[in-house]
Length: 333
Image 1 (spheres, rainbow, N blue to C red):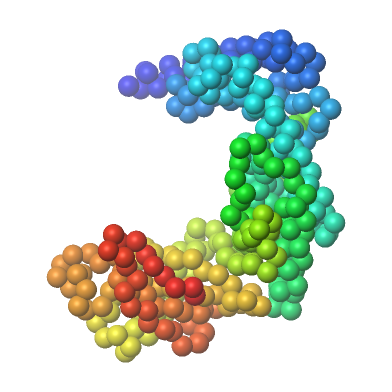
Image 2 (image 1 turned 45 degrees about the horizontal axis):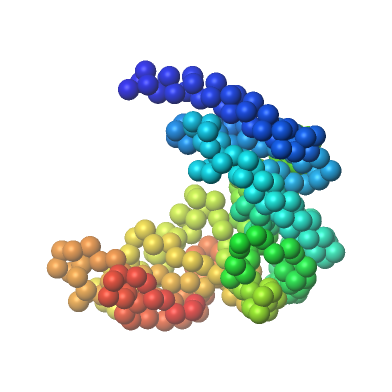
């Protein structure tokens, strides 16, 4: 088995170089002088083939990504000429989408430091803003208005339905210092979608702001905000919240047991950055765990807490939050 792993590792770069050469030849035959190979990587597992990246002449933002199947006779399960044509169309549409998004946020004073990308569309931009109790309402309204303009101006991605929502990740201004930068020869979308950027931006807590789409556009008034923490900080926060809720339940529901392992979703209380609302699951004495079975949490406590997990305000018990199939049915926090 070890020998097979070593062989696969040794063959991977060789196969990818062959795929890169063949993809470059195909691009030159179909689009002479318009596409330039700028990267290639093996897909995992190795049987998945390789992904070849191209820059587009005359469009510094677009990156074409072509999946070459392991046998090199097809690309993503279809003829490679059709796959490349589609990848080029999607790359151009995504680049237009990025330009519309960057322009809309730029007019409001926000630079886009990273984005998520799905074929012919971009999304989940990362921007920097200082959120305080005094500014959070205005900042979220401003970002929402910017996104609404983008949603009205953006090109319609091929074959994609109207989004149900858009998320913007808002980091503190100090988080964008000394970000890793890809080679200058890379197209903008290749640099802004590189995994190193979100990894660097998420080293400290940030806010994920979600806006719903209504009537084909972003609704600026629909913002909900989650705080996202690095793993170790999230573990400490969750443990503190559970301990505080367990202490409160000791008198409110004697014999109740707080469920471990459920971190929940914590959203900012509107107009505040130092108060979060969410739920903690628990089992009452009459629930199945009392008969020796592990209870997944049949009930919840709706709570508001501070950044350290301390209770802020009176918790509220919510009974019967499990459906018959085991899914959760939690009310809005």
